[in-house]
Image (cartoon, rainbow, N blue to C red; front, side, top):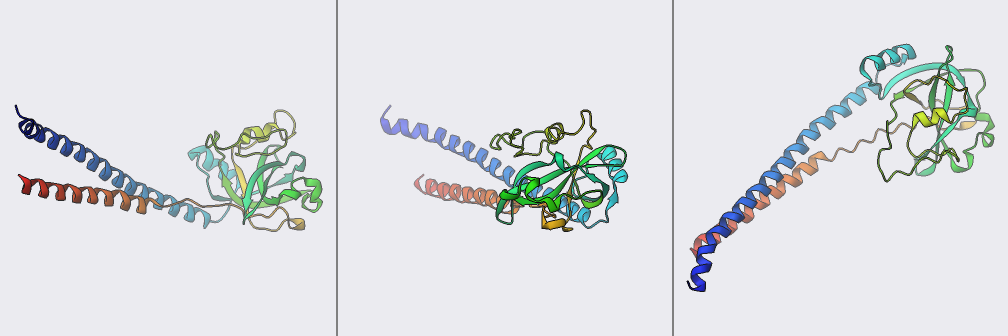
Length: 250
């Protein structure tokens, strides 16, 4: 068999192999585009639910506990809590607020029944991390806090997030169990399983700065869907041009 005959014989195999691979890639591109459309609808629904929750009137803590017991979902629900701050138990979460690096101050609030709940009172800059550097912020006696209920993550969000530096009281992810254990409160103290982001109500002395809840859920699924579908269309165009050229050669 001549070399030309061998090439002619292998051409159909190569053509079919190319078509099969192209079909698989095309199916994958369409599937990815469809998945992003589904994610788009999910994200839009999630954002709508969050906006609806934030706009609702705040409820008292017992009602929020009931919701948590029934659904386990209290994210971004407005709540009112009353008690006394235990400033000695402050925990500091590394954060950036309006372009400035510092900490969110999470302070235990002792409830009337002896239990505790952490309140994210807001942001302080690096040089005001320690409570001794902002004595006016150390509210004494009973307080009433309004804010948004939040559920802390159960594990470190990602391997790129640093480990919490317990010795220096610097938390890079909100390990509420570790915060409670290291807060210096009596052993066996009962903490509620969620915390509260305080609203913008000004604290004495201006610190911490409240109202730091960030609702920044990226919603790029539409552009991702357009990208995958565009690649699928481009592949179809390439295959069409290739088919026409090979037909003319044949």
